[in-house]
Each structure stands twice: as C-alpha cells, then as structure tokens.
Amino acid sequence: MKQEGLKIRAHHGMCLHFFEGKGYSNEFTAHMQKIYEEMQKNPEVEVVACGDEICKKCPNLENGVCNTWELVLHYDREVLKCCGLAEGTKIFWNDFAKLVEERIISSGERQKICGNCQWSSICSKKVEKSLLETEKNCVTL
Image (spheres, rainbow, N blue to C red):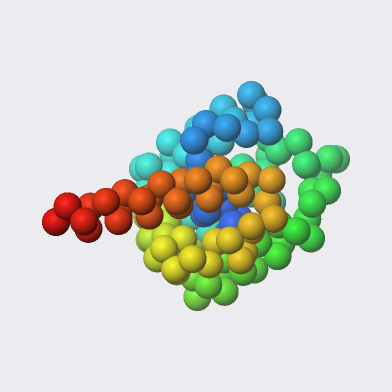
C-alpha cells in the first residue's frame, strides 16, 4: 500500500480510532488491520466522502457501488463539518486523528453522527470505558 495519495473516508477516522480487530468478514478485518497499521506510520491522507482504501474489501460494496452510500455519506459530511475540513483535504493521519478525537469523540458528538451504525456498540463501550478510566484517574490524583 502506498503512503502517498492514500484516500480515507472522513467517517473512517472514527472507525480506525475504535478498531479492535472486528469486521464484516475475516478478509475485511485483515484488510482493516493492514490499514490501521499503515496509519501508525502517519502518512499524508486525503480525507474524502466517497469510496476509499477501506471500502475495497467491504461486503456493502457491490459491483463497485456502496449499498449504504446515503448513510455513510451522511457520516462523512458530519465528520468533515465537525473537524472543519473540506472534502479532499490532505492532512497527516495523526493530525486528522487528533481532530476526530478532540472535536467528535471527546466532545460527545460521535453518537449524534453515527449512533445508528451497526458497530456503534463497540465504540460506545470504548467511550464509556475511557470515561470511567478518566474519572478513576481524577479521583486518585
């Protein structure tokens, strides 16, 4: 996978934040893991609101067309809006991930954006766990 010109759907910034090795299929999960590892190298990415590298192995992609395109386009547009980015913005992954963390996850916007996603329970549990750990750390200070 090239580091240059890597396209990432805006909402996949959230998916990668919460990724824990689960997915639609073994093939999809292995592909997602590969991309997750690539992001750890902090490549420059182009944030898009259309199919990206992750979508290539998604079972919702049928004959090159996403069968949930309206739903995920909404997610993408909301992430772009919350992060203050335009579609096609080129940004280093760590900077994009930080925007997603600060402006969506930590601010409590995630549930509003994609609370109806089939994977939302994974994200909600991780947010809850993080809040409990933060609360615990504050009490022990």
